[in-house]
Image 1 (cartoon, rainbow, N blue to C red):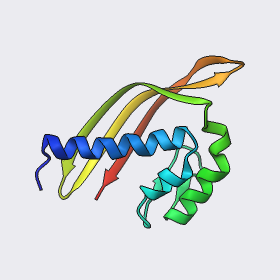
Image 2: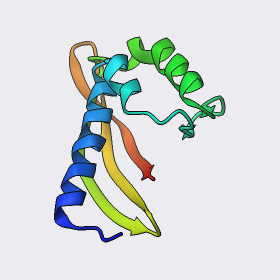
Image 3: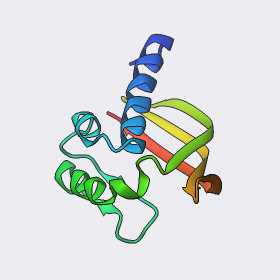
Length: 115
């Protein structure tokens, strides 16, 4: 496989659709983009999820903490072909809504592997 500009554009479109759905609490769209064998490893000790069912359950339970209350800004995204997979690495800044003020929360790194 070759990582063409067209393929990169298509992958990034899906990537943004997934994370936009997450930030807006749209579990229907988000889950439609997940593979049944998704592996999600978050930053918290309990955030190791081994399949779509576990991941959707976790996101549904925590959506109210994120939806409309979190923004990702200053994204730096790289796309790299690794064998027959595509790795997207995003470095960004997370802002949260506190008392009606968008407040810097911290830096974030997300790695997403498309197979």
